[in-house]
View 1 (cartoon, rainbow, N blue to C red):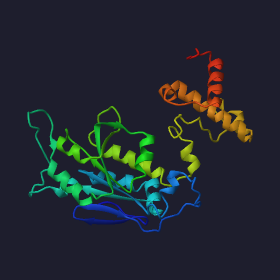
View 2 (view 1 turned 45 degrees about the vertical axis):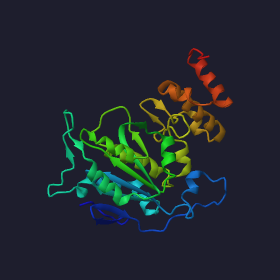
View 3 (view 1 turned 90 degrees about the vertical axis):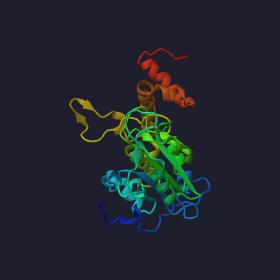
View 4 (view 1 turned 30 degrees about the horizontal axis):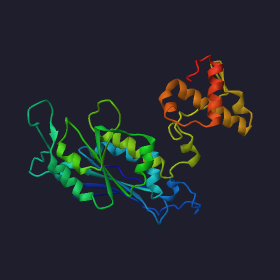
Length: 293
């Protein structure tokens, strides 16, 4: 049995576990046409609540996740509705078999078509966007998170075991991968996707999301808090100066420095501003790095 709290009301109907929302939607402060897409999609005219349906063998894996602060905040503000559809509840027969051995032989078990299709048909409608979480899909990125948040209804299909019957692939609008590594199932990638979407729903300050790694195509600059000195290492003086412009330039420069050293591929795919090019030249001179040009 999943936990409930003041933010969520739990219902179980025909094998579908649904977190229903209790409060009215919060509207953005501005009706400016230049308001960000993130704010516009949260207006009442566009959508009261984004609905995410997760088709999974193991809904209990989401217990703690759905009670975490970001998801709870999205639910409390009536921005997000998450429902868990248990594949096992949609299988025929008294033993509820949802998998079988692969044709042609081989290791592992394959999830059968019928239970997944039965589960999918209980939630899919004309406005649904269905994602199959698969190692063969395109890698999930922050750009994709922005694309998915524009959907009114997102369906995530989580595979398990050796995989899903290939005939299910045609039922998905797209396939998404969490990366080039092996997991036991699609539940952890689904949680990662939901968390990234919830952060864009207005659950945290807009300035916080804009300055995070990948949001602007760069890694985030170093962050510091008290104490001012720790094990002989001090907070950079510029951050104590109170000079907003100097702090902005320092943060941009350190963001570029981190990206250059840790993820140079991000710079290769980015159109740099004149200011960024100048700061990169400064970094190269400071560290005696070869000029890539």
